[in-house]
Length: 221
Length: 275
Image (cartoon, rainbow over all chains, first blue to last red; front, side):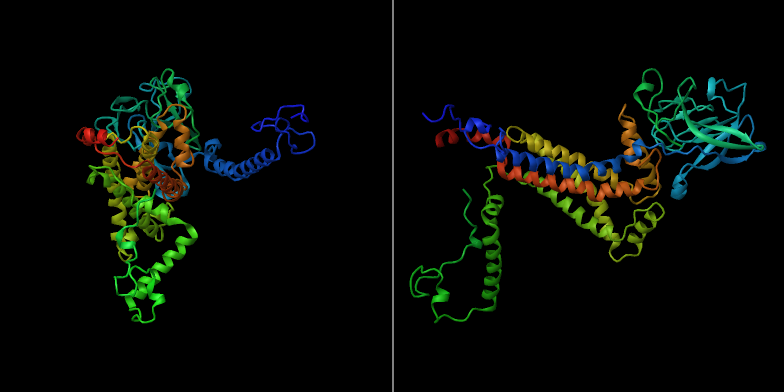
């Protein structure tokens, strides 16, 4: 005791307190703690080196803008009229065969009926058959002039506005244009209950009031 | 303290007088006068030797004895087997699933054909696929019965809360197995059911649409949706389930099981006496 000027505390975390040599000259951390820390850090780095790329690989599609701006020909102008819908099949995902096809109901924009504001206005009304509730395929019934969903009983009027059942917003539409007297269908867009245009949302996402800030738009066909 | 070896596994001591000395232990090697070992004795000796070899090198037997022959409280009844029944349902799903994976092709253009080939052409394919299909419902039913047993017997209380939490995670993972497996036959029903299920996930504010994107691998149901579901269904989720079943069982063995709630009142006086 007389030799050592300092009190030796055997439980101290530091070399000086315990009166032993440090990891290297002048260092206060013991060799054991230095090795522990190094082993943990190396193990952690090695784990992250495969875990992070793997995670990014799995989550990749979240950060990709995958949908190209493509237009699909659905027929000559003469095929469509002002009053009734003509069903047309288009590809939303050409790679997966029949599962990638969907039906679109198309008619000419009718100024007497269609009062949709702003850029919801298109030369042709192209209604997506993807139900705004949970994405089942809706069918248009000409006699009652309604879109009906087979899964959970959603009902839409002839403009795609919700009339009954669980859907949270009108049916989506597609951009349309006319090239060389042929009608072409392009990007999907979603609409709120006032038929104002929004970037495409997943089914089940509300678009009225504050809800439009709570659901991020997702790139989609 | 490990419980003693069960009688069937203990070596029978030699009968008095048979081997010369009474209770002399391994007399067979020492006494040349005994008859040569019969085939049955040799077989038993061979198995015992192999088990002994393993035990000497792994030190497993105290652990296994503690695990398999642990004491259970009075009042233990058939409802206590629901947990093991769920685990065997999982094992059955795992084994039949491995064999189904030998014939199934997770490709949007091949999935339906390969699934119907399993049912129609492959020897016993219909049976194995049927076991997997009906076994999935059996597992869901059993896991909820087990959960109900634990709940109504109060077996989730201290110190077993962690095991309850692990069990709840296992319930969720089992339901995820159902969800991801439902797509794989790739007929109209499973396709649209999956569309609906993914859009249900999308209905959560803020994170929902991203979760749906993760499940679909993109914003639309695409060519890799089925491979993603397949990989989740046969690799990621079963791996997690197996690991968590291990943790669940470890805690069961460590903490022991609870007596049914009606036992305590009956035994109160006796317990006090023992203390």
